[in-house]
Length: 434
Picture 1 (cartoon, one colour):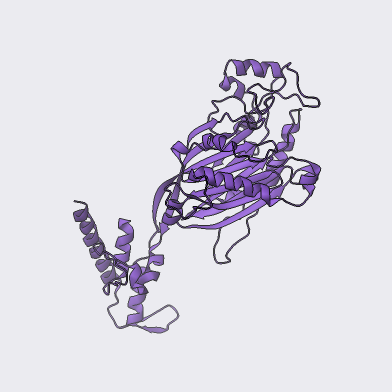
Picture 2: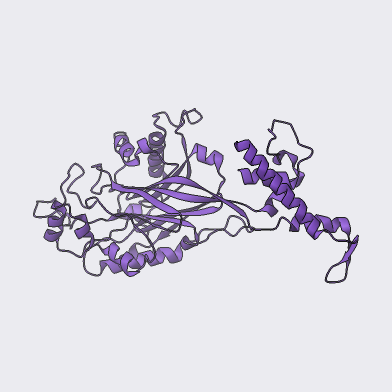
């Protein structure tokens, strides 16, 4: 039945193509163009063939699953036992096509690490652990060429002091789709507005005809009145100063964050609660997340069209992710409990967030994990997002002189075999069927 439908569509397309050529074919062998010059009729017929194919691009859409996760690791280095926590955070039983992982404070934010030279070994250690965890293989780098059907490849990684992003794509995605124009950028807006203790790292890429931007940010801390203004200013600076260098002068690819089709912003955004500590803890004990969100600073920004005007965040149905008393505790810091000397009292808050912007994005879940590796709990969101696969007829005609790329609907390609009767029409039909 499917073959019969394909043949029927092919015949209808043949009839349309033939009729279109008859409509445009001149009655005389010579014709005049606007400037009065004469061209041979065979040249005209070639132009007509192209003109008859000039209509809107054929656009198809496919869906990809994107895992987006953020984790402030409080300056701790990755250790072997962390693999268990990482596996739980990445939710590998429900694996995604793309993993976008953002970290903050992968090094202690001390003077030497902030103003000193970048140490790439820390990022390498994290990438090694991520690669082994994603592929479920302790010997990942020794067996990178293996047949594991859950192999992922890292396509981008960028570190700025303690802010770090790592993007991984499933091998099947890389084989099926064209992934191009992968670019990175970092913006430092910490101390004096120019040091990298705060700021962002970002990745831009093109998957077929859809552009993606992933921004990992670590914004100014503090819960005093007016501290949210510092965070808002840093967001504005990140929007203003993030710039992706053009990789080709012949293509118009997005250069700024908002120039992309699908954008994901994640990180320790440090937005707090407009609420006294004891009242916040009372709502937390009641698990009244909706009531608590009414006092959330970032929620106010989203509702009132502040720096994140038009952005979206999923419903928060989990406890605040910061600040826990120690790396082995499920108890929030402060609240009348004794703390270490010099440790700041903090009202619990949803500091770790994931936002998105653009059409064709559906959030499937938004959760936190329970790793006690740091004083933050990691968060993650799973998205289903559309990618557009564009094929203009003009582009397809350019392949007309390469018979190996043009197949009749019923023709099976074999190595070294060419179809002498291939035409632009058969390529068009192949694209319609695809």
